[in-house]
Length: 140
Image (cartoon, rainbow, N blue to C red):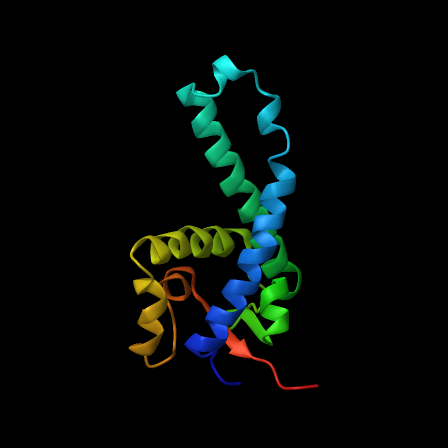
């Protein structure tokens, strides 16, 4: 099977971004319920950030482990596989590494994604770090 191209991956990322925004919108409904004097307390601010990152991680990890695809990946016919020949399903450890390194890939102005253009196997930083790869599924 062919490795996914950068435009296809970015298309899936845009779709997933919309889904993640909706998930965060729903998950953060309780934020305004915190009394105003406590809104700027550092511990609460950090908790909210970790909470949102955790909710997003659950969406991605659950999707990757359940069928190797998020909603955006399904739309663009991309599937995530483990590079380990003894297992095709991605585990929690691989999902966590992939998620955290993908954040770094974006924080470096997308350099982790652009790495696909220079890697012979079309692997991003988070693919390399987590031992995974993205393939294009055939049309059905």
